[in-house]
Length: 160
Image 1 (cartoon, rainbow, N blue to C red):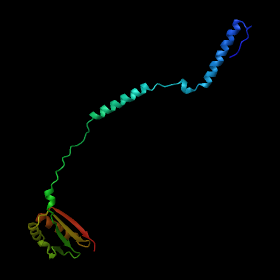
Image 2 (image 1 turned 90 degrees about the vertical axis):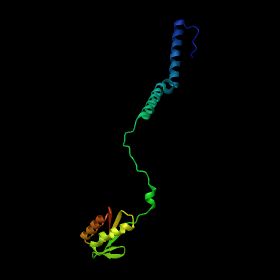
Image 3 (image 1 turned 90 degrees about the horizontal axis):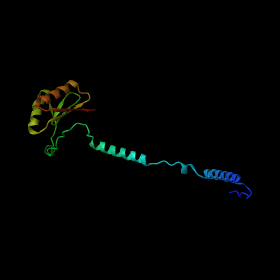
Image 4 (image 1 turned 30 degrees about the vertical axis):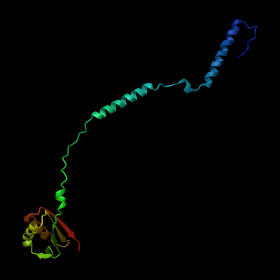
């Protein structure tokens, strides 16, 4: 602060004091930072966040998922314990039909298939044809096997 001489009158003294006050305020303002002056109250924002959190928790717990109910079949161990053998039929490139290791005429496929079904419990047959075999022969064997009573017929192509 400034020391004022004693001979100043009261007006001059009060002016000097006011000037000193203003200078002191200016000095204080320069030393303070913006963080000290401006503060944001976080309480209302936190209140809103917690209210939104509660809202979402409540709404998600009462939402029922839409979908289809699936009835899954139960696992039957009895069917898998008895392995079924499938009928194996081979057709070579010349059209010769082999069943059980012996050559069979196309007209006798039904009878041989029914004999196989009497001895074995199966629902499937595998026809293994050479790639040069005529398609008509393969289709005719498939029809004969279906007539005999086998519902699942698969065709395998053997490359020569």
